[in-house]
Length: 370
Image (tube, rainbow, N blue to C red; front, side, top):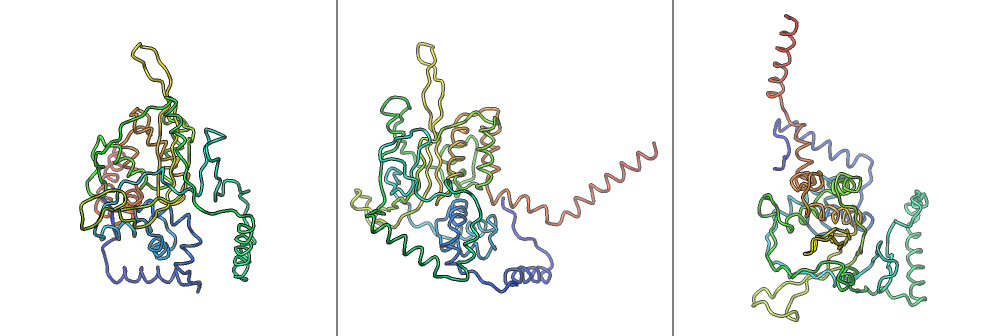
């Protein structure tokens, strides 16, 4: 269920909305949607993932309308998404085809192709850069920096062409250290079209995790690391890059790869985490093998993808710990559901509260008589 705006006096509601518009405009500065799209990439990526709608321009517009409130942005985008016709289904995307802009492994120092640090704040000092204020008074500062940077790349013959490399976990599989599985061609369940039922399928869990509120997914992943779950992985490989999306010919029979229509790229973050597990052999002895936790989400959002890979592994192994309980995890990480339910407490509860109040008064009177 998703709670929506309160019903009541239309005049009062209209004035409330006018006041909201005033709060947006009162300082006399308007931020362009293009500026939001280019400067707030982290927020754009977060809300696109939680809304399961990949459209940077539309996400920027929703950010502007919601005045930067992520939960409200996701609500707006999901509401808009529900009005869109679903004309095509894309072909299965193979993530090893990702054109990489960043690729690191916490498991191995040396990986084929090397570690690609790419763009990341991980290596910064986390100090506020007050020089950014100067950009507002002199717009040529960023232009000069960008020109010099591009010139340096050109002079050093550094190519910005995306790179493709095999997966790190493939090497572990070839050594027999990680289990291999047959390709599952079963059509995945679609949680946007059918209500979730328990026990859930992995395709449903992965969809809900990637749509989950970033903070909630991160918090539960962290809870598992702290002992409220049994999964504490090592990141085998973290990838950020572009994936090509193709569809079958609209008016023809599905053909080979050469007949697919390329419709664009999506930027994603993908994580494959490695978790050791004791497995009983036919002889009754135990030996260790490596299991995989998987996370993927729109845009550049590494923390969420890592946390998702933790929860994916947790939910594959039901246990008493809260992070292994699929109903607990999947019902509580959705941004629209959780925000809506909390926000509904602001709606009128006059009748139910009066009933509680009467009950309290009667109890107090009864106590005095004693």
